[in-house]
Image 1 (spheres, rainbow, N blue to C red):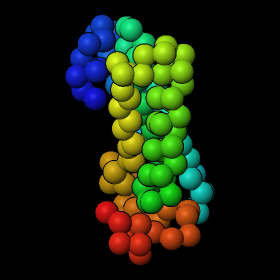
Image 2 (cartoon, rainbow, N blue to C red):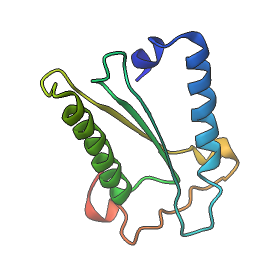
Image 3 (cartoon, helix red, strand yellow):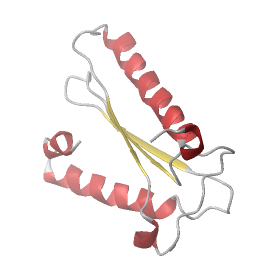
Length: 122
């Protein structure tokens, strides 16, 4: 992810940094038992390698599966539009805020009904 951002002009990197920090501060501000997503996509110069960043309130299996599906859909859109399946790849990066960094203390559980730990997933 960092190498993709390093290719941008300084002003664009600054904008992305501010955007990511804003997204990380924004998603925790939801009522208990609810979740919030924010997404941003960046396409490289030849429009075949999207960088997809998703920030969510928390991370569990449901969130990871949904983000994976979102990233795969965006990749499919790129390859359908360009016809360059072999040359295309997508990088998806899901982020969640560290509770202590946004002043929340203990992390809140995800709104989904079953946690990843109960399913034996990482």
